[in-house]
Image 1: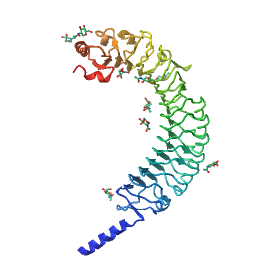
Image 2: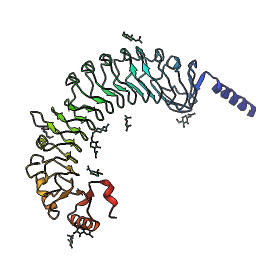
Image 3: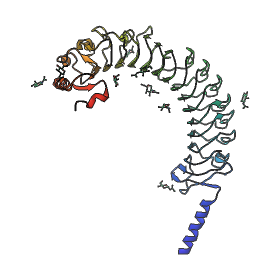
Image 4: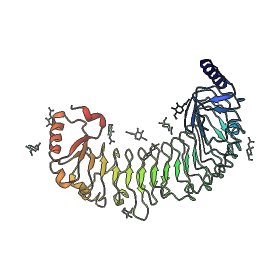
Amino acid sequence: MRYLIVILYICVLLLYLNEADIQCTKAYSIICYIQGQSISPTNPFIIVNSNQTKASSVIIFDGQMPIMPNTIFLNNPQISTISINSMNLQQIAPDNFANGGNLKSIIIMKGMIKTLGNGTFKSCTNLLQLQITEQQISFIDINTFLGLQNLQILVLNNNQISSLHPLLFNPLISLSVILLQNNSLNSLDSTLFVKNTMLSGIYFAGNSITDLSNDLFKNQNFKSGSIDFSYNYLTTAQSYGASTINFSFNKLKTFYLSSGESTINIRNNFLRKIICPNSIPTVKRLYLSNNSLSNFLCIRDMVNLTELDVSENKYLIKPTKNTFMKLTKLMILTMCNMTKFTSIPAKAFVSTQNSLYNLRVDSLSSYKIVKQLLPQLTVLAINTLNKNCTYLQSLKTLLKNQSISMNYCAIEDRNRCN
Ligand SMILES: *[C@@H]1O[C@H](CO)[C@@H](O)[C@H](O)[C@H]1NC(C)=O
Ligand SMILES: *[C@@H]1O[C@H](CO)[C@@H](O)[C@H](O)[C@H]1NC(C)=O
Ligand SMILES: *[C@@H]1O[C@H](CO)[C@@H](O)[C@H](O)[C@H]1NC(C)=O
Ligand SMILES: *[C@@H]1O[C@H](CO)[C@@H](O)[C@H](O)[C@H]1NC(C)=O
Ligand SMILES: *[C@@H]1O[C@H](CO)[C@@H](O)[C@H](O)[C@H]1NC(C)=O
Ligand SMILES: *[C@@H]1O[C@H](CO)[C@@H](O)[C@H](O)[C@H]1NC(C)=O
Ligand SMILES: *[C@@H]1O[C@H](CO)[C@@H](O)[C@H](O)[C@H]1NC(C)=O
Ligand SMILES: *[C@@H]1O[C@H](CO)[C@@H](O)[C@H](O)[C@H]1NC(C)=O
Ligand SMILES: *[C@@H]1O[C@H](CO)[C@@H](O)[C@H](O)[C@H]1NC(C)=O
């Protein structure tokens, strides 16, 4: 009996050692992890899963597979998700995904792929998600995405893509989200997205784009969409009516609102003005720190604004009682590191008295009556630069007596007087 078990054990072991087989180094129900293996292009790739379930998610990582075997999907047609991470993959050959008709998701991370070629995914007609990130892709041929009419998510972050053919995305009629962050794009053709009418998430942060056409998103309805072009070289931009917008860290001098925006991040630009639409702006959160605004035009009309940051706008005029008159829903206001003015009378904020609970300013002209004027206030941050600890301690007590906790414009300064 004992010998029988040993012989059986050896047989099982031999089965596993068969070069042709791929063993899951870990398997949880339908997920098979293949870690630290060297996989040759001639390997027939037959998955031996000790748990005897047919793995539909295969995650191959931390090993060597410079060239992908063509047999992966032929021999394992049940695979719907494949992830290839840190396998030193050098290229995707035309036949690698030839049997990928059941694939829903392809994720390829951390490799050395340099180009994507015509028809690579033409069999993957059910693919919903394609991610090829942290490679060295600099060229994508015009017909690369042929057949991907169901693709919803395309991620090509952290590559070296410097141009996109105007017809490249035409087959992607179901595309909903596209991420091309940290590439080398200088421009986008105005017709690039004409066929992608379902697009609602556009993430192109970290490129070198200098200009965007007004017509770029003319076929999209962005009502609940997001666009992110932060960390580019744009000098002028518009919101395209998206709900969440990020153009921070560009070179914007002007920014045009249309309508329907909810959150706008345009920090760290050279903005002198924001151009409002003819209708009342719908913006709820506006982040404008480190720009060159000199007045509150347009901002003062944002009746639904709940959060505003205008810190470090060195030309901005000091607000008066009229400035925030229409902003009766403002909850968080940040105006730190201003140079043209320091202290502001607390009464400048009275119109926000039913909502303002977090105020960050360099200093107020009277701290004694701040709670009387702003009954909702629970946090007041001030600029503590050049202020001695004796003064700060008494101010803290004064505010504490009004149930307001003192905070700091510069987080670094928080512990200075402890
Ligand atoms: C088989 O699956 C169980 C739980 O589903 C897991 O604990 C075990 O590690 C798996 N075996 C292998 C060899 O991966
Ligand atoms: C890809 O397809 C286009 C259009 O048919 C063709 O012009 C181009 O030469 C093809 N690329 C390669 C590498 O064959
Ligand atoms: C892009 O690069 C920046 C700077 O290196 C990095 O902080 C950011 O996480 C990157 N974005 C993505 C999506 O990897
Ligand atoms: C852009 O701003 C939005 C909203 O503030 C934020 O969620 C997003 O992470 C920002 N993007 C980058 C690349 O910093
Ligand atoms: C303000 O923006 C400029 C230009 O983008 C940048 O060089 C500078 O570092 C920013 N300052 C801060 C404090 O973020
Ligand atoms: C402001 O918010 C209210 C309540 O959500 C909404 O009915 C109104 O249309 C909004 N006005 C604008 C200009 O966004
Ligand atoms: C601390 O600052 C206050 C007001 O700014 C000043 O009146 C006081 O003399 C200062 N105390 C010390 C010890 O420097
Ligand atoms: C805070 O309030 C207490 C009691 O209400 C009072 O004795 C104290 O003087 C007040 N301190 C300051 C700094 O106003
Ligand atoms: C104000 O400036 C300080 C020092 O440069 C910086 O650390 C802090 O983040 C700034 N605060 C705001 C709200 O911009």
